[in-house]
Image (tube, rainbow, N blue to C red; front, side, top):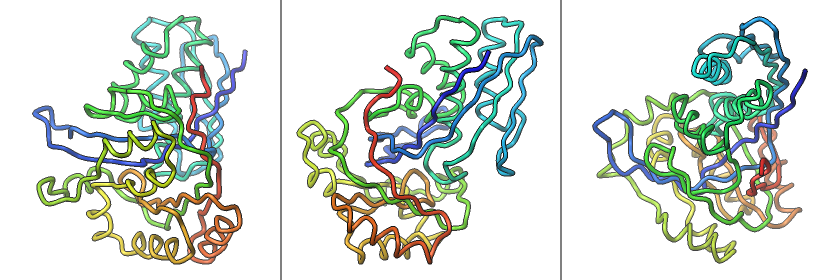
Length: 288
């Protein structure tokens, strides 16, 4: 028995960090949406209760360091499943990029293994389990567009953004989310207007969305990695409607309505970065 699942990347249209919580996590407000850049997850049922992870990418670990492995292990242990699964990950989303690739893989495994092992769990139940694996996994179980609060596990669905192009560019550096959060001074950081972003989405106001993109973590990563600022500037000069770093970085994205302008931005970055993608906004829930 085989099951295929799509694991789309997400971008943060808005990311605000409010304060550090007593449990060590940060209280956040994030407006996230999915884009049409996705890993492909192939699940194969195993009769023995073993979990195997395979990938052609050398950046993908095949043990408990992998969130997809941990997703299958969590379901296997929690529901005392005596079967196993082979997880093959076709990696298209850049690794350690601020695009939730690992979290989306884990969410895809939760959805697929739930079907494969006949567990009968709802998306809400899977999202609750996903919060035990990582802060972005709950959103990735659903996909679409949402406001995520708490440490990212409290999800409020929002309308999809108007259709547009998204140009993504990841410099050849890795960014540690932990390091970025450690370097954040919440009281001195810039904070986006989350309510204005939510309102713009509800009103299908593309210009309002572009005017209100913001990321509290961006200032920290910009100080650590000047390449991120260089990409932002190049996108602006090439005519992007909005430019922002996603998550803790280092990937920068631009929103662009016009096809020709999106292609120009894509072409201008290809000589600067090896990992550049020109994709469409998804923004709607594919799994419902």
